[in-house]
Amino acid sequence: MSATSQRAINIVVRQPLTMVALAITISSVYGIHTWFSPSAIYSLLTIVLGIVVFLSWPLIYTKTEEFAKLMYDVSDTVTANSKEHLETLITELEALGSKQGLQQASQLQKKFDNLVDVLKRRLNVNETTYRRYAGMAEQVYLASLDNLNEASICLRSVSAIDSEELKKRMTELQGCESEKERQELEALNQRLGLLEDQNSRAASLLAQNETAMTLLDKTAGILADTKTEKGQASVDAETAMMELERIAKQTNKYAR
Image (cartoon, rainbow, N blue to C red; front, side, top):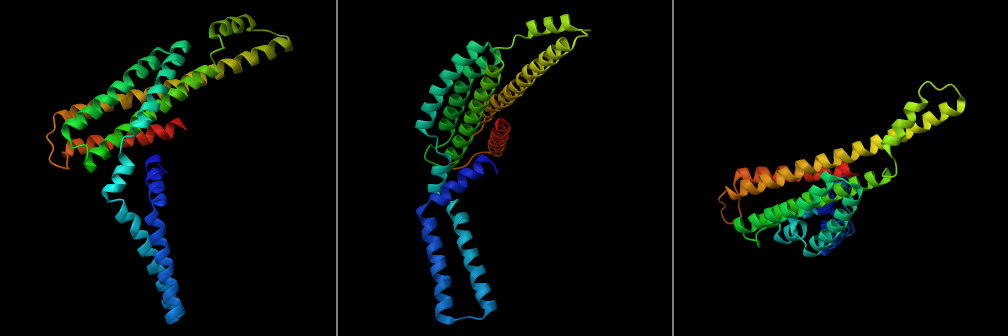
């Protein structure tokens, strides 16, 4: 299940009216059985009908303005915390010598802020469309931050391994005959494999971020070239935002 779906479910479940709808459904089914004592078939039909009625509530609620605000509203608190986290990441990536990661960390906030600014100019911030689009952009931003954090952890885990020294020592041990030297060579091989694996994973995470940041720029450009009507956006803009949502889901999944 995607992070977006989980967020939507959590919002619906925590909504007090969900409990009210459940209580009404259970009371209604119980009342029918108590008052009318229907046959087994009608009892089953009543239960099925109750389930259908209850499940229709989330479908109705997810179309409301309130749900859109809870689901997609860009949180100032989240953004502030993310900026603080980003500053920490910049320090870590600089210490680890990750030029690509450092570059992404310095650009990510700017690209997100730029897209939100374009959204504010093209759409009414109080409308559902704006909140949905801004929420998608925020998901990409936060997922990219997660990727940077994961990449930093990968690089940190092997930062004490000196590949040059490893390869030099492995070259010296080539053709060795003693059991002790063969064991040492095997240990060095494992250490080098660990270094390569973690570097490869970090590179993959950063590649995901490059795609995400390019899409943030592309979406901002599409929106800048698009004229919108009240509460609506063009097909091109909608397509771009759907692609943003897809990238956010993909990036979140990959970072786990």
